[in-house]
Image (cartoon, rainbow, N blue to C red):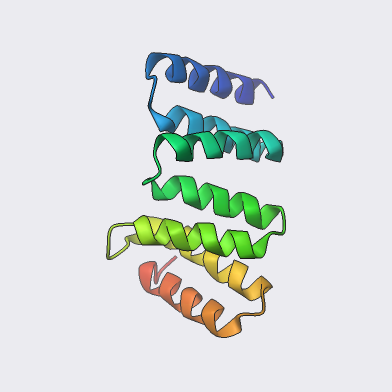
Length: 128
């Protein structure tokens, strides 16, 4: 808990020092999600999206949150939006997003789509 409190204090300070920057807001949302406070996480992710609607990481986090809430359709929409914003071709660092997208398709019984995304993930990080 102490580590989480320190992180939140640092993110709040960054929010004050860098008004208009979405990254501290996004990090606060990520910390809330990590500690299972999903309603507050959603509020901060939405605020980060309002500040910077072109950051794929924001949509990735919204997709992960939707998945955790068992909203697999929403997860697919957010994760596909994230991938559409990633510079092409995506690098290895986007492998987790691609895998998350494959998982969401699998949960929706879209098995062909899931397989295609899993294969794409393997091509991004073949040794992972």
